[in-house]
Length: 200
Image (tube, rainbow, N blue to C red; front, side):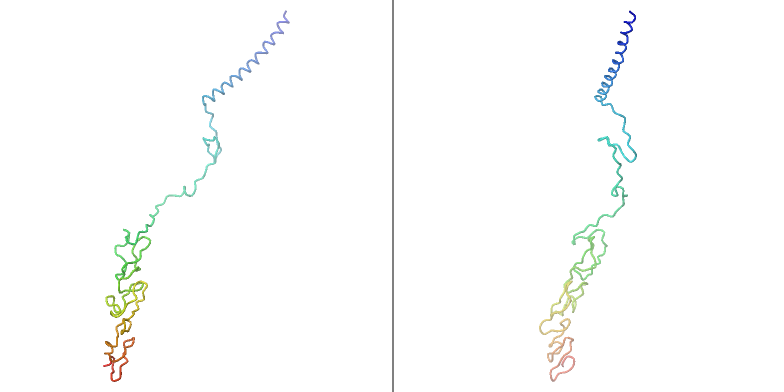
């Protein structure tokens, strides 16, 4: 009778540990499901030095050093030069224009300001500095010829027929009194019977 009772107790007590083990597994699985459903947060990941946690990928990405463009200090740079048309003046240009008075228009620099370099000359003027034509600007070539004027001109006079000289100021009739032939320098070659500077 006593031996029968002893043989049953080991089976009973032996089943209890197995039942407890499966119960613990079920509890653990249930806790895992509850944790995933409720969205319980896991402890934050610790990234090594020089990296930062990417919240999207949950990976440790290297920290990027700032580029030269973003790390360069701000400077008070001057505003860019505005290229204005030749018909307008920049408000920062000098009050008095350096353009020569005998030039019709002068070239402008990159800031739109007038320079001292002529672009076009007034009538009766020639060359890069707009000099007066021989005989004067108002009486170029003594009104007996045409002056090679303008910025690209050389100021040479093309004299009308009967006139000669640098400014077309000489003629047989006026310089030699009609009694000789005038030379370019204004000297007369007199006809027979006439003499002197003007063939009198």
